[in-house]
Image (cartoon, rainbow, N blue to C red):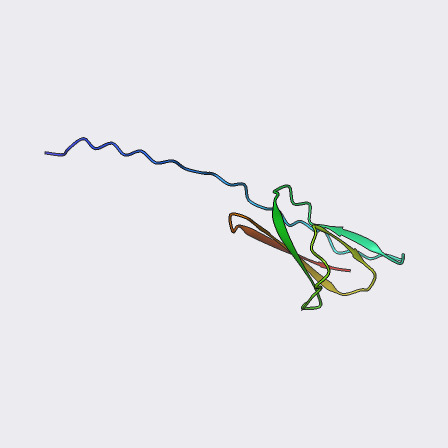
Length: 88
């Protein structure tokens, strides 16, 4: 015979971060703004240009003045992360 067992648990649902840099960019201007469009705050950000960390870039937006492959990353307090890559 099976016993009737009831269990309760508190769940916390955390939103997923977003990293969406859109399509590659071809521009004939001195600078382009990249925006990860992450709606989840607080969060930490990291940017790489051609595989190298840009140490001064710590927000969800980056002004780009040189061509290359850029990776933008976001990580939330809950440890969720998202990355996106764009060619400029």
